[in-house]
Amino acid sequence: MSIFSGKYKYSLDEKGRINFLKILKRFGIDKENKEEVFYLMKDYVKITGSDKQYPIFYLYTETEWSEFSKLLENEFDDDELSAFTTQYCDETTMDNMQRVSFPKEFLKYIKASKNLFIQGLGNKLQVWSQENFDEYSKSLTKAVTSKDYHGLYSKLRKK
Figure 1 (cartoon, rainbow, N blue to C red):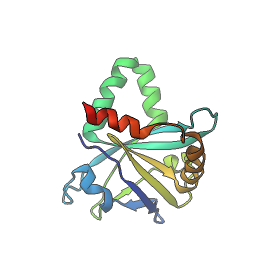
Figure 2: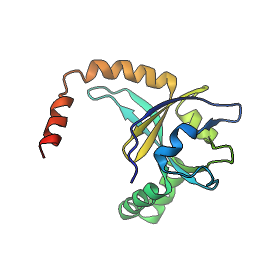
Figure 3: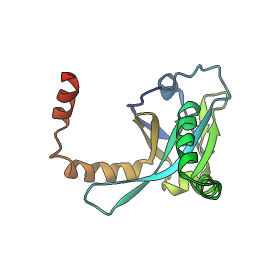
Figure 4: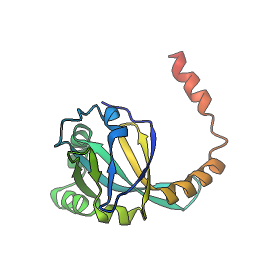
């Protein structure tokens, strides 16, 4: 399993594509593999203690999506699964220039004009509009200053 932790800023081209070269190594994908499929799922991020929601979508590798799909199949009956995948999910592939196109519906959902912010989040990537991420980041800085992240890391190191 790959762990994604980087942060990337991208500008969409006129066809809604981004050049994916910066992220390829993190996915462990050979540049010659032109048929890599990526799975997309709409979601949102909420700041703790606030009602404000920011639309995002996740990008999964085929391996990670397969694992996630097993969980979905255990939680939903066929009708619910069909509704979920129809409303919230899609897929995309990488072209021979290592670009990924995002469906217009997904770009509209996150309110992306041209600029995207992509953040590694464990086994998946979060895709944001740059504008929403900037607003979220400012709010987040105010909301989480009291959390002891260094203490969490110290606990992990002691194990």
